[in-house]
Image (cartoon, rainbow, N blue to C red; front, top):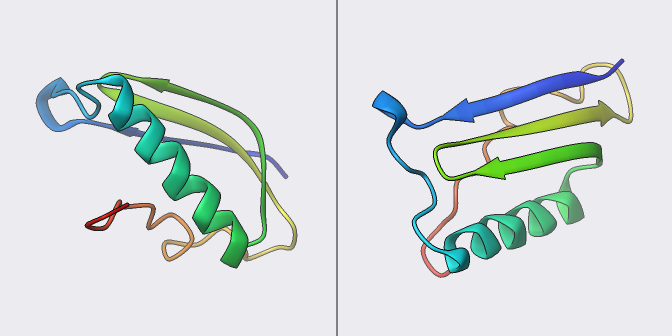
Length: 75
């Protein structure tokens, strides 16, 4: 089963201010995929929100912990 997952900045605030912000987010996603098995079918990053189409390997793999893609300091 495919899932459409999205996140939008509060009050449509910008999540990404410059190209380096987009690149840092993509690095976080890449690091996350090393520890969490998830197929990304498609994604789109915009300045104030993002979308992912995800295809979990197994039922139950797509949980709140999986979606904790928050950049940490030094990401």
